[in-house]
Image 1 (cartoon, rainbow, N blue to C red):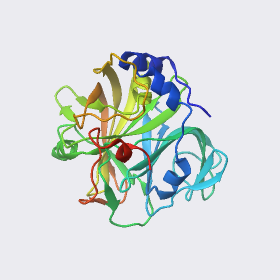
Image 2 (tube, one colour):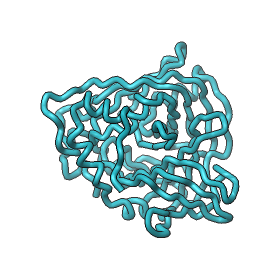
Image 3 (cartoon, rainbow, N blue to C red):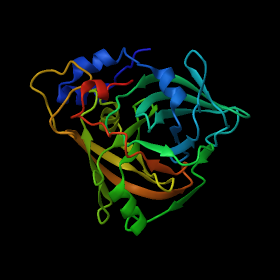
Length: 309
């Protein structure tokens, strides 16, 4: 079914002058099944009892997703996000970092005795830009995190992981309470932490023009950011509130989902997060190694390389 935009998303699309391409992409889903079948990492965000979005991951050798039928998919384990038989709203991302393939899956998650079912209300693929190619060192299936522990923003490990990070995931929520998970990537240092003020800022690079996450933040500032330390499989979960600012406004309305720029990392906007809690997540996912001979695609890459394939 087509993506329906809410007022916050329409507002930021209008600021960026991307309404025509956003409306076009609302009716395009891409090769979802193919992308899900090769994903070796599933990233899910569900609401917790205190109203925050919490991340759960499933990593291991693909395939991790079975297409049951229609808009329903199954994961091969009972995830610890609800009691068996209970359902919760979920934002999901199935991603193959090595192949730079990712598909969004938002809907309802139901935990069974030995499987978890996701019935998607929204499902579509994203482009291949800003993904740092990596592969799992061990293909054994792993549910994460195994443990959560509060940690200070001034902690040396936190500062080091944020400074090196090239891969993170942003969970936001729309006005109806539906979570959404999107990938965020960039060169090391694109996440800028001011520990004294508990503020994290980063550029929102030019994407497809839908600006779903930015629109969610404009309407409901509550977000959770998951920053992964790929070599160890650990992660940092930051929760708080954010503000999105548009930096690039086009004179001519954007009509195409992909663009080529001279700047490899052109900022469409800026996200500023006021951090309320920081947790260290142990055994979040299988440890991963970077793949040196697979190029990192960005906005200066050829359009045929950027597009989902």
